Image (cartoon, rainbow, N blue to C red; front, top):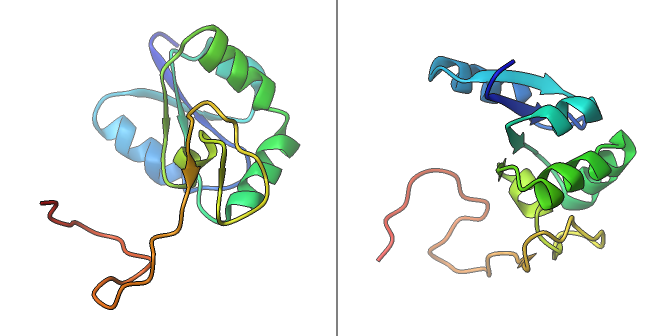
Length: 128
């Protein structure tokens, strides 16, 4: 498949919804848990839903960490992390004790309690 996007299937995430939206805008997409597909991908999407430690456990259990490192770090292929997938790109999260992939020098922190904020929050906001 030419110019393909591989959505990484490591056992968590809403893979079909992401794939359907990418296909709707004309992208060539496959969902895969095969290291060779990740290595051959032009672009990589790392989705994820849930707790940080569980996500890292599932990613490591999948055996895809090495192929992701080769593709992204060595071969400089673009990657997009969505939700938990974005958190995993960093060093870790206050949500757990596991280390992340460490590609981005960041640790995810919980939004502090505030009487005017609902946590978790989903939706659109205005930023000033």
